[in-house]
Length: 123
Image 1: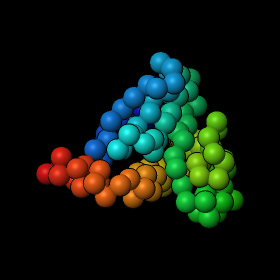
Image 2: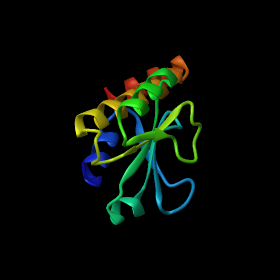
Image 3: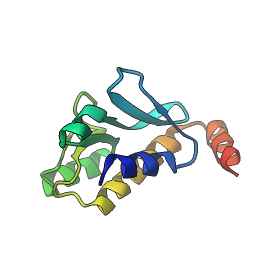
Image 4: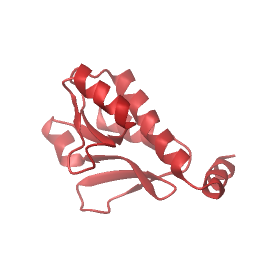
């Protein structure tokens, strides 16, 4: 996966916005004002891309046991976030599935009112 694919895939989801809340390096994708994906642009440039994605705690443990590229979230809650090393042993299709999972977890945590606003905004 390359940066452009990651960027376009995240932005293709309903109600997603991009931000740089921490510094000029860390690209953050949010839905309903809550983060679901973040990544260091510098790491992509260096050839060691990674992204932090929210994950169900039980599934996070299973993924970490199965893939060398998936580790506890760097600078995040180790229970609810994974850091995925891109272009390692996690396939692009798995990475997209994990982006979807992260988005869905965050979207479902939003109030019903915000969920409806996002769905209606996209229609």
